[in-house]
Length: 220
Image 1 (cartoon, rainbow, N blue to C red):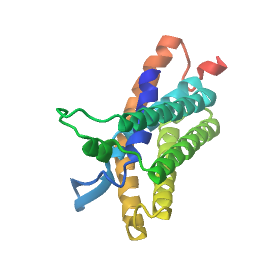
Image 2 (image 1 turned 90 degrees about the horizontal axis):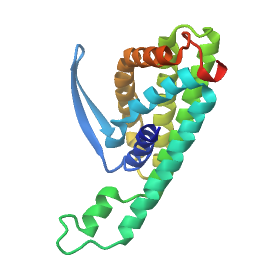
Image 3 (image 1 turned 30 degrees about the horizontal axis):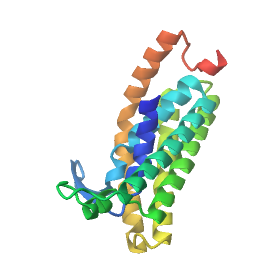
Image 4 (image 1 turned 180 degrees about the vertical axis):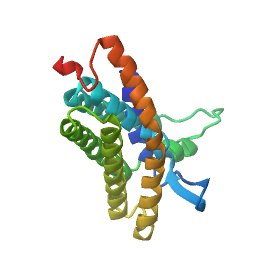
């Protein structure tokens, strides 16, 4: 459980530096060379939805929501530790001086607020849509709720964090649409590959817990 919480907390703390860690990623596709301009915090992001969907599928909506809140609390703890570390001066022989540490790990209020707000909204939306689709399909078609909830909630997350960052003048509005498209497509691109992983892990967990397909441990 601690490893799951750490994944969520790292996402929030990493994406809070979205304006400092934007870099290009080139993909050669059938339609040509496309360059993604994304933040470093996006890289581990698809994993958070993978974990949320597995917990939602096996343990139910309540446990998934608790996981999101636990990750949020862990993120606050990490930020507090980082802020405390910034107040302690580096030694004269340290390879990382105070200026470098602050530049890399320093937290910027509007960015932190934007990232954590987007995190909560997107994860709760993901869990809600996942269970709506699960109820609609009567527990069948795991691929549909896995991808449907993830794709929509990732659009919500990307839109929310960019809207807030642009509103706080952290990022120029002229870059909004390009970063929205780049960030969203990058997340969807990698999230599309997690469906076999979701099927494999949920199969193993169900087998060990003696659950039928689509059954939740909270309802057993």
